[in-house]
Length: 439
Length: 200
Image (cartoon, chains in turn blue, cyan):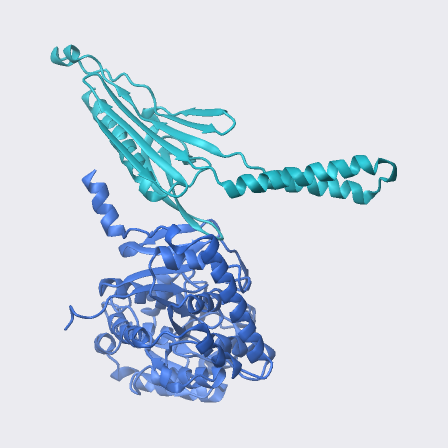
């Protein structure tokens, strides 16, 4: 049964990849590695990062195209609609790609790649990693673009059921085309400390970007109150951002220099060493589709206190997480409850449970099922696909149709001036290495 | 003696590979086919420039800023459409060995060689030559290049004590099936050089 599963050739596309570190970047990397191990061919495409441009091979011969399009805003490439068509077409043909898998609604490269891939008749999958609102101008604009991209998509993946509801409401796609495949954690990398920490002093760890979205303003209210109520508690805060100044001011105002330690930006490779120096992990995010940070903390044996937002309640069982409303008083109550629960927490048992709950191999297996469903869906011509765009809105629908028609015409022109047969297919890395050994 | 030929829409590849006791001749010729469309466009560009200049001469009493702009645009279009094709690129990795009696007498082999020659011949007859010492070549590498609009393969040489890669084909982008035999031959030549160093 294992040997008979289909092998796919997948192109992962996103503006967010190594050398950046984050949830989306980790997801793409670990998923790609596990899919490679399962025998699929995976290629990643992202934009150039500084001098990192061209083709690079990372662990296990995972090929990455860093196309020389510079980011213009928040790591996103400039939206050009059609200018990325030649390079994307070339990559799809030379790598013989059958499925294009785009990541993150905020990535312009992802949206353009999915549009061009659909025009060329490739199967496409989209994974949404974040929750977005409905009311503010940025979200309205983002949702319209998402509606355009997902109008003609085969299947989508969301990282939690809450994220699925959010994506379905924002884009208007059918819920039955959306799969829920949660993120995972590398439990081999995030292990508890060899010896359990003493409990005479309780250390609460916070590691996040210090921005509004991650609830840094809540921390400013919560920390002084907790320090006042519990004299044996101290905080370690890792991360940087515009709200760091507020936390520094809070520390000065309440004279908490010896009880609140600010580490600044923590490299991803050192996150574990910071986590294992604490007993409780505090997450104060105002919105989260999933929150991989909680998984990392639980894998290191920390009890988690988190705001009850987005997909967070779906991540851990009740005995491993204490949830609170995103309000200072409720968070203080939750921290008190967590301190009372500490004597019953065994980090090694928690780590073992996390190993059984979450695994990237499981994520790859479930994503493979999505790919199989996508490959089984029927091919449709452009005339059959255009009506899907018309339902996007009275004016928007017509504009979307026009965009796709122009894209189709440009693609046919490219086919005429540079036929697909003239683009050489790339030999697989393994066979090229054997060739060189023979020499 | 081994010879090879290969053909592509734009390129033709001919290899001459002869081995004797005292020398190895290994020459790779890549011929570039002229593009008739580009020749036509280059004539159109020249025609536009000629027409603009003639108009300038006719209107010499009524010259204005528009006339000079027209001339400027004519020069630009002629320059952009200009076609100076490369006719042939030759990679010569031939190697000469010392006579066999030196080796029999046990003297350390002195490897006499001519460095690889990279030569391109343009359509107008101009020849550009570049010599690279065999000992300076660390490794020939097939490199995948990515531009904002396309990807292609190139054959480059990693040189000792040099940060820059040396392109074997400076202005051409031959297909991989033409690059591979040249790459293999260069790998063989550099391996030969490594072996001769080890004899010393």
